[in-house]
Image (tube, rainbow, N blue to C red; front, side):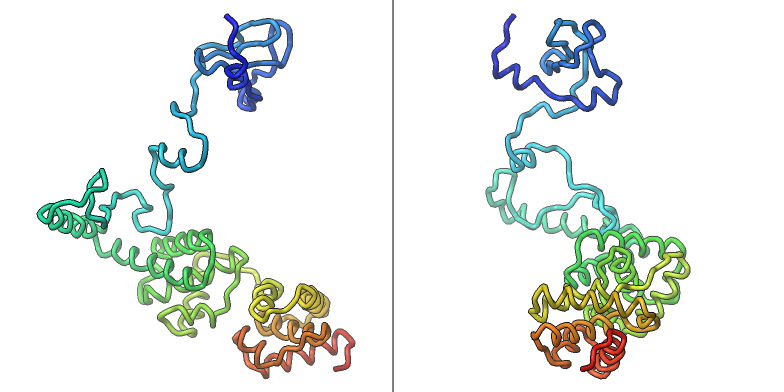
Length: 320
């Protein structure tokens, strides 16, 4: 029976999964022109008509969707599991909207009943004090990450680090906020999106000294193997906040590379080093910024910028 052109077009696929399963060509005529018939569950050679495979299982959905919104509406699965929630997002939640399945407002009696159910649902999500503490810590990580504007991957890594610290019993004797902040700082460094301790402490509820001390402790105990932060990682962000051109950014990276090769970076703060390079580059590219402006963005002192700046221009052989 001759099928319509549209149906044949729909059935034709270059099926990579068949190659993985070992079916690369027709065993009769050795043609690789194979067509999948989804309706009958068969794999057919279009040249000689041999049914190469039958009763194939279609792993796709039984419904059709033509755009992303339709796929999301028809999907019957929830969100993926996440480490950023204490229960990994596997529990149900009762919506705060007081409406039924059809979008109609519910009665006052039902509304008070749903309020009680919602309250108990929140209570039973955490079965003990340990889970409540984990819930609080992960919500703190989420709050600080939002304030710092870091991507979702950093939040996931921070949550994994905190869970490891909890499992190794490293929280005992330390504040939950301190360990959560240290986990976020470690995650930022691991993901190559560094934030300075000053920036982290601004959004945290603990002091900079405690964050640094706790960070050193958990990184040592968990064997995180942190590499020193590259000052070039800070350059794009600082230049963007100072509204400097691409030329200044390139020049600042060049200054950092050349002076780091001579060993000037050893033992220096990467934020201060990056700030001094940006200040020097802005002067060289005639886009002058004051030391105060650069220091405010980098959250370092003007003295630090002056000291690093002098070292860098001497190493570059520039006489300012």
